[in-house]
Amino acid sequence: MKKIILTLGLVGALSTISFAQEVTKDAAATPSVAPQSQADIKFDKMVHDYGTIKQGDNGECVFKFKNTGKEPLIISMCQGSCGCTVPQCPKEPILPGKTGEIKVKYDTQRVGPISKSVTVQSNAKSGVQTIQIKGNIEPKPVEEPFPANKPSQGAPLEKK
Image (cartoon, rainbow, N blue to C red):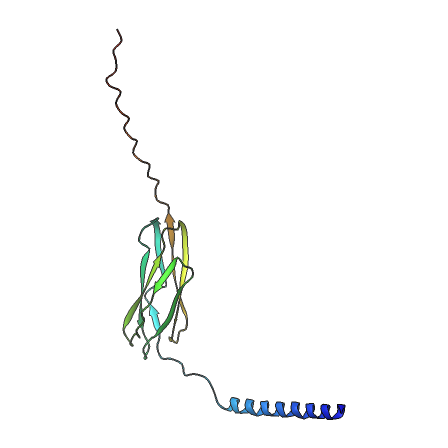
């Protein structure tokens, strides 16, 4: 009984191995490499420097780009490095030779230095691109309320 089970197991294993090798040979004969896109992206700047700005100021900037390739450029994803950096990318394809823009909004309520990035995925042959924002946000000056006028006590009294 043990010999029969062992023999059946060996035959099953050998048939599985030989079938797997045939499939591998067929898969190797057919290349599965996708053709590379002819679209490409060229940014006018890779870094936007806000410099020093005040807390609550406008945190918007624009990165302009051009499709320098020969096919339409399709941006599939724009993602900020954190929730405080929100990019807006074009949804429609950018034709060869045409331009587009990515708008980035940073939450300027956060005080301190800025060093954030936006990852741009597209069908460009240059691959994934990373654009950056940097700068420094100073806190708003503390506004002290104007001292309230105390009610008048009347004119000073003269001493005699």
